[in-house]
Length: 331
Image (cartoon, rainbow, N blue to C red; front, side, top):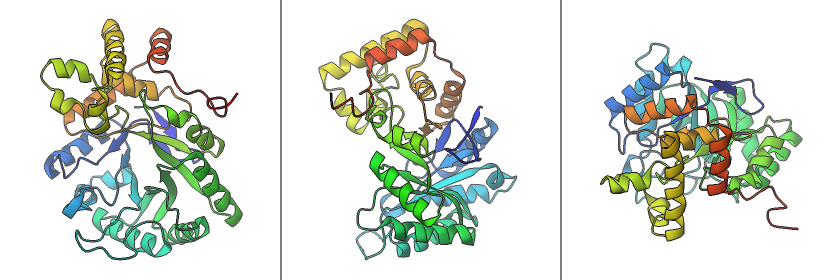
């Protein structure tokens, strides 16, 4: 496993990030523990979660599963760079209550303590804002974060689903306060969805913010979706926006060209999609969310895959990026 520094920090993290969103809803606790053990054995030290994972009536369940894994000892917590998120509404289902979500200083304080309890740890390495809170000023957010850093409850702060100008606004506000600011941004970024290249990634690079792409296979679209469809696994190969995308003949043709190219070179589509992200400027590492040990093993193989210039050129032809801004939308 290769390692890199997270943004402008000195923190070393694996170039594959273990996403845990399936732990609880789709992967039961014992299997989740086995996947985390296998990840550490493979050298993956960067684990990502969120307080709302588990969803519905089970919000927080994923953090609890990670906490029970830490409780087994054996250096599990010490070896793990732990990232979680705050923003989602943690009020009980059907019982909405003010200040149970978003990024007010009140909710940040309550949410971090609740996450620490579920995780069974006394600190979080990377505390991320799961979404933009348009109603809370950055000065308030950074005041809350600075207190948590001083208390030793968190070490770094990151963002998720922020626009380029949000990253700039956040870090300029932090600089005025003498705060460290954002060190990472989780964004939707993959071969089929490259809009982040216009402004999010350049802003992140300018501020020393590491990019952590989520949905690297675009809901399964880039993981051999058409091949699996032919083999009878279509219902499991795609989900959400990607399943809808395959109804578009133009998209189907694009994905067929993609799969034909990789078949010619003997490369698994899902592994190629991850390996491509590892070649992109500013990318720390993509988040993979394995439901099984084999899916994790595939991600590890992708981290060792080196795509040749011919393949990279053809991938760009199939999935052309938008180009830099402002040229992408101006003369």
